[in-house]
Image (cartoon, rainbow, N blue to C red; front, side, top):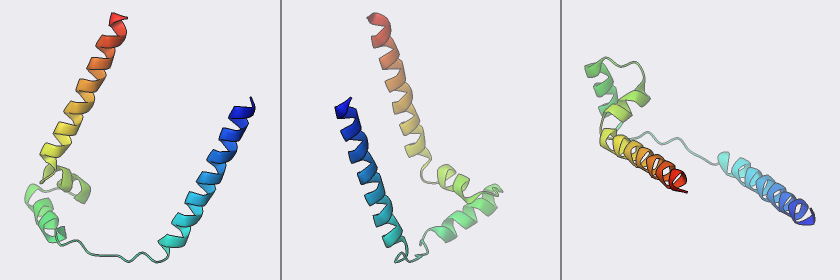
Length: 86
């Protein structure tokens, strides 16, 4: 019980510290326009997409996105197989 209390206190302190640091740094952030934004705008017009985030996934990151999905699916199937084996 005492361990759990100490862990919760340490977790609370680290969360408060992280929040304070993020709050302090966020005021100094500057907006930088990406050099690729014109490419994505043109892609949105070409494919007739209203959402720019979708164009990012349909553009150059499509293979990366599919590979990440395949890794997650393979991991889930492997864990399912291992758990059933036990």
